[in-house]
Amino acid sequence: MVFLQQAIVAQVDSSFLKYKTLNDNEYRLLDYKDSDDDLLLKIKQLEFINRSRRQYKMSPVQLDILACRLANQNSKEAALYKYLGHYNLAGAKPYQRYAAIGGKDHITENTAGYWSSEQIPKDSAATSRKIAEMHRSFMTELPPNDGHKKTCIDPAHNYVGIGFFNSGNDFRYYEEYIDRYLVFVNAPDTVSIGEEFKLLVKPAAKQYLYAMLVYWEKTPRPMTAAAISKIKTYADFSPNIENELWTNEMAQFRKGEVYEIPLRFAKAGMYYVHLYQDNKEYLQAPKRASTKDKLQASGLLIVVR
Image (cartoon, rainbow, N blue to C red):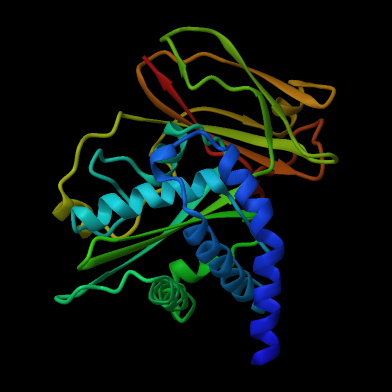
């Protein structure tokens, strides 16, 4: 146990300068920037999360500063307005909130909450124990009610944002898992109805885009805290598929290392773009195409007005 604690301390010390530099250089959501003390807590929690992943032979995740700030924002609103769920007061789901601050990767969220009639301690040691306890609660889930645990150990994740907020009597904790695999050379946040544009996407070396599914949904509407707390899960898509490309159709848009995908949307709303990748390129249509076991490599959201 002593050796393990020493190893964790050494890992935290070696990581702090790296993440402090990233934290100081990130200028989005500055109102939710972590102090050095909170950043240290999160680096410790990151090692705790990675210990969980190692137990299931999953690769470690890195800390993502922007996702941490999103998690801080989520935690503060949830604690102050006393709700627990995956929507916010604006009615936005995790991928919609992430897109609103510039995120284009696929995101999956875990959240936990705690309420006390007495004041919840705010010192670093108490906070560290509380967020470790909340992550541990995810990892002790049993099937079929083990959605948080599955999220923690999903092999696709390579980054995580960690956030917490203590309002005095309410404590909220968020984990925002990120799947980052694509470089978007051009991906507009907003376009006009009927406007033609090209989505320019570069996968990692020796990876190819396998399919694209574009889901349409209405702009979110505000929700009450009570309504948010009643909804325990959220869908990572909508029932409305507006556009799709598969295998050999996708391959025709590859120009060297970059895919140039022409798009145009005919009505207002939000268009959620799922891009799937594979380590094989299909120049002819396979007998059966499916996204099963394919990596969802994006969570791009484009608003059409």
